[in-house]
Image (cartoon, helix red, strand yellow):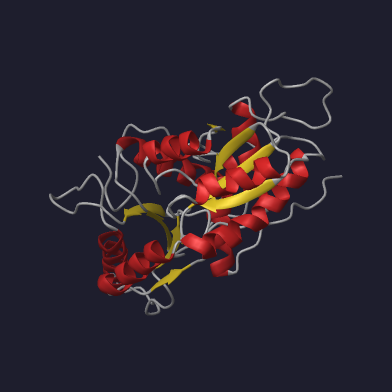
Length: 309
């Protein structure tokens, strides 16, 4: 089972690849500074085994990019019952991290070591959201208050070109787009119009539209964003696309996955009369974006390798 202190035992952990020899080897990743705040991934939605596996995979990607990273998961709808809760709440994870830091400081003093009192945030909280969702962000901020821990909250993961890349991959996996515009083969089911589905109302639709423009450039087809949590929004955008000449539409979830139930996507796609791709999920770029938000909050930058002669 998971605990506030780390991943559940038995789950696979992505390990850093051994460094390649030669002058063209990749730069060594910078390691997390000693005593750096924990990265706490704030996971919305109903906690499930699938959700936990997704979150663990994303943090495994982040750990492989930043060795020594203390990465944890906090669920907005978690359960803190028992000594080792399977789905710890975000505020409990933050409170636990603060308690651990205080305990380390007190042990160092008791051992006679000269140490400074802990300063700065005990954790950096990264919302597992592709775009802004006001109600979820309010709950995350309230969890920070309830934890009584010094924690810093980052922005959501998008808009970002890597999210457009992930959307393209999910569409191609579903047979709804070409994997590469440069290839000459055709895909019979390729969509000529994309409905980009998000949650969070008009603010989320506007933010998704930025990534949508990047996706449109990749696919060379029109892309329009719509809100899953606004009745009729998906169907309305689908009609707009059909009115402008798109005949074969696809719904692309601008979602990581835990934000909404799968049947909501299926219902929206059915109402719009189109096929749909899977949510972004544990696509590697998502894990890198999670780490990027953490690194930006702490002012960390990738270490450049010295040339080898």
